[in-house]
Length: 116
Image 1: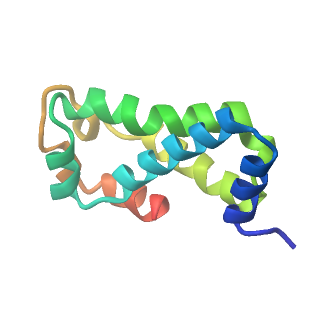
Image 2 (image 1 turned 90 degrees about the vertical axis):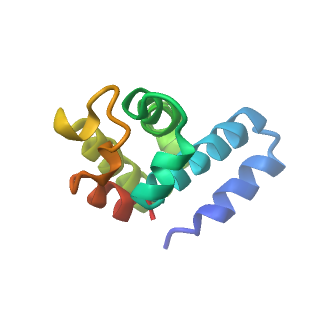
Image 3 (image 1 turned 30 degrees about the horizontal axis):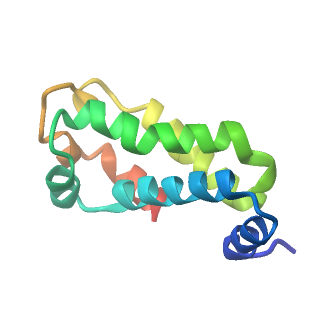
């Protein structure tokens, strides 16, 4: 039986793995952004939505998977992998640079569901 993710987090914290704890917090911020409604996503990203969501959300997800997948429960890792795949699979219309309305594209709904 796998433990909840909070058990892993507190274990890392108590072991002094502060770099991992920091990346975990960045991952949580990224997931929070990806789980928001389209309106909230648009409001939270000030510049080019496509460029910013790549660096603020998908980047931390992929970096966490790359660096720390062994430290995660398999179910959590599976969800992160799915988010990364959904992000990589977005069409040009759903991730177009300079378009502030990309989050209203229906392709973003599966990303939001998985991030939640």
